[in-house]
Amino acid sequence: MPLLALGLNHQTAPLALRERVALDAGQLPAALASLGAVPGVEESALLSTCNRTEIYAQVTEGQEAAVADWLARHHGIAPEMLSAYLYQHTDENAVRHLFRVATGLDSLVLGEPQILGQVKEAWQAARSQHRLRTPLDRLFQQSFSVAKRVRTDTRIGAHPVSVAYAAVRLARQVFSELDRATVLLVGAGDTIELAARHLVDAKAKRLLVANRTLEHAQALASRHGGYALPLSELERHLPEADIVITATASREPVLRRTAVQAALKTRKHRPMFLLDLAVPRDIEASVAELPDVYLYTVDDLEQVIEENRASRREAAEQAQAIIDLQVEHFMAWWRAQGRQDALKSLRSRGEAAREEALARAREQLALGKDPNEVLGLLAHQLTNKLLHGPSAALRQAALDGDLDLLRAAERLYDDRDDAQPAP
Image (cartoon, rainbow, N blue to C red; front, side, top):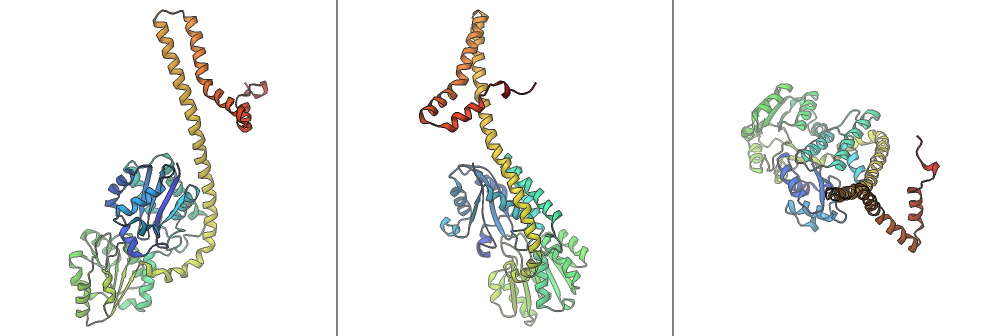
């Protein structure tokens, strides 16, 4: 059964489509259960971040298309519409893709460290729903080891540039003097935490932190000298903000056009810089149509991030060499599993034949038959049972001229003295 990696990301799909297929943590259990019910899907995991939604699965041969169909149907999208944006990798290429994702080589920000934590969360979610068996479970765990090895042996993680850093860098290009700007942060997760740190380093004049859970906003604000407020007060404080950076897990926009219009009026149309780092988007797209508003999304950070890519390309090449070697190691294990399956099947058939012969022998002994006669019959029946299949196959091989099978049988059943194991 092939291993499959299928999905879309910032390189293949626009933000409007990525946000339609994005899954938050609360949606994962139902999605994993639904995917697991697709015929031919033996095990599966779902990875969904602001830049990608991906399925990793082991499927029955020929059922790969059913996985792509599920992704479209689950999100109410016509399969033919989604297919143009999907990539699909199998076996060795699927393994390589996951290793590249976990190490940050496939990220918008080359080498960014947050993706490894997101891959681990996807693995834990799949495990908690009992959707992983040995092959996929081992693949994910090996991806963690590969990521650690890459960060230890290369400089891919040196001077990391996160999406949050790129956002603040862009803000500094718009507001050259952040020490005069009030910045409103919406959310309290890792991205907003990183943004707060970079803003403090850039000496932003004032930080406001709004979050649905006030305690989380208060904790973040206290760490960075900011002021916390509940999300319900967002619109009231919006006119104070020169810069707004959002990164929540909301399925609906938290900042509507009408609220921004009202804030601009109060500000007497002093410009506002809005940066939406969330997928799905936190800020209503039509806000970009308003005068005196500069609205950017995560896809607009490409130019800022590109400046960092050049310095990391040499490290990325070294990382790719490590990944290629680890792909070979995993595939060697994977192929060995296939050979072990054949051995397990052979032993299983042999043990079944033994149990059947023993049951007949016990029946004969219970009827009072002579033990020597019963033992002879047992040996005869067991020998016939074990050799019938191989004998028939070898006879057919002789008729067909299948020399490879005949030579393999000679090696397998070689009983010469020099073929016996040493005592």
